[in-house]
Length: 202
Length: 300
Image (cartoon, rainbow over all chains, first blue to last red; front, side, top):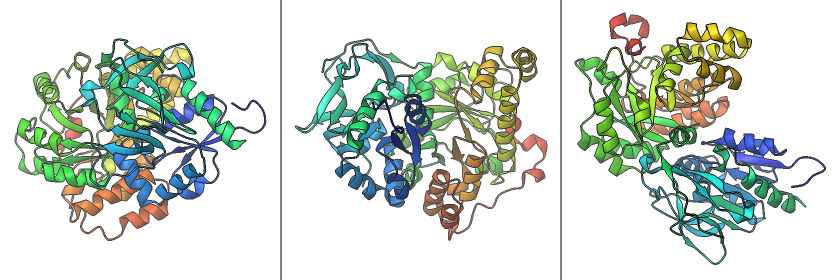
């Protein structure tokens, strides 16, 4: 992360979901985190976090309030984006088990399966090895989580469960996790993301 | 990349509270049929509450209100992909066991149903499924959290379409939290005694300036402006019971309440969302309800 100059400005898509938790982690890392609910608010940020929440709701509101296309444009122009859980779904190029008409912003060459582990009774926490953020395991919380059912050639898996299920991916400046690093005091994913934001901001 | 084979844990506090955290900024809608559940999901509900009768009908028809028929709950679970909640009677841990066996995502131990136990609430720690419980004040909220509730909703007065009790309860909880935050450490012991809540939870709330779990509001929300009012008063999200499917145009009203909840601080969006919604639910003024018919007084 940039050690000098003005802080990096990172937007957190604030239509619905665990916005507060992401803002807390980003702020703790020295970034200036601002909620984004309108297209105009997107122009002032160097990167965008898409939080956990209900992907169908975030999708609908982002289209209803004219935010979906500007997000796609910003991503195509190279704005770094990081999605957790619902955010991973929204950054996937393809989804299965979405609701009728559900769309995504895209950016990750993956097929994501929504609610892949089952109901809330199947939500779980576990330790994961994620070498890209460091040798210490990541304590990962999966809540009605999606998984990466298929990884295309453009995307790189970052972590998998014991059965090989991919649960974290990146593709250039875009990254996504099935789990919620923002709710466990884990800051290494956000730090890794801020490095991408710093690179893109030049 | 390497693969991980660590043991995994289900039903932890972190996982239970986590789902509620993901619902923040959203609207949870009461539905009584699979068709209504579909309408709710399409309108942008963040979850649905599956029940046999909405509170307005429970109020009108009277009698004992119980857990819904498993067939109905399963039909709703099958219809939608968003989380499904269902209500158990206060203290009725067997209804809760049944709901958990039906694979619902959250149980509401609810005063809208007839209590099954006038002394004890359900021991919610003993379940894998998370619980949401109602509260009219901070002490009640903390007692429920102490019993294992992973989410709190302020009660309001369900089935009335009158938002005044919801306002009172969310304001009360907020004011009591602010009061705790202003106290010195040695005052918290007496505060815990007065709140009739465990000292550890009281100290945690004082430190955080917030409940340790997500706080939604419920009971009388009928319009987009009602929902935004609750959000401006500090709610993390909104339950809408009778307000949607007892109104003239449920689809439009549901979508409008979702918009107003997200843009709760933007009067222009709320104004736009409020246009042309048809008849709101008729409603009952809470002041006209004799005390024995107030649901919020169930639970303690």
